[in-house]
Image (cartoon, rainbow, N blue to C red; front, side, top):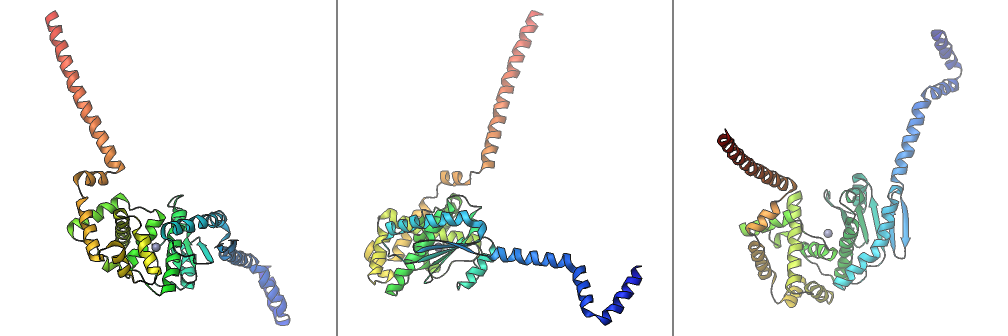
Length: 333
Ligand SMILES: [Zn+2]
């Protein structure tokens, strides 16, 4: 029967190619439907929505609607925080782009003119386009405070770039990143701080000059570079509050960075750097080292050790009591 049908079809095909085509479509229908569905799904994945409030627009894939609404509301606060700490001028209309996958982040990064592969970046600021590109897929795993902090950090980069462009000046990368973290209230983790202190004591801390143009690619070295920058800026502000604002204000008047730093602090970068390294090296004490090395497992191990010691003492006490009672029994006998 089947052979008969095939023969009939072959003979028909010579007469009518349309019938053969219809038969082919009918046979391939499930596969075609799957292809159409897959294409529609991928188109949906790249579909972008946008929300706007005044001069701020957030562009996002549909499933990031709640994060987009949050980003829109948070940007105003972020910009206010930057202005309060730095007095920098407004950069104008800003677009925040949210990327829900690494692939989408990389595609947007290249479209916006980014160079290299920002493997560890949570977000990147593009100036003069005034775009903040956020890798939302990574933010989700960090915690609820990460979006506000990230927005302040990147907003500062836009504000600073706007001012520098107006006066045609540049700042070292360590200053740009150090101040961005300081404005955002970001902190160096105890482990990385411990490494900074050890490296400062051992003379292995990367110099500020080596962090002027670019940061290392390797993850730990990159963390040290960010921490080194933040630690120095925090120290400058702790030593004399208003230092950052003073440097930026002098630069907004057209001063070069080195001169602005010297005028504001009364010392050059090398002298300040040496004093900061000496301070870091001095912080390294036994107690700090011990506390920074404490982990959940080491605390549990200490508790277990204490419990075992207590058990030994109790057992010894019990033995003594039993020996005493044995002696009493002996007397009774
Ligand atoms: Zn940054």
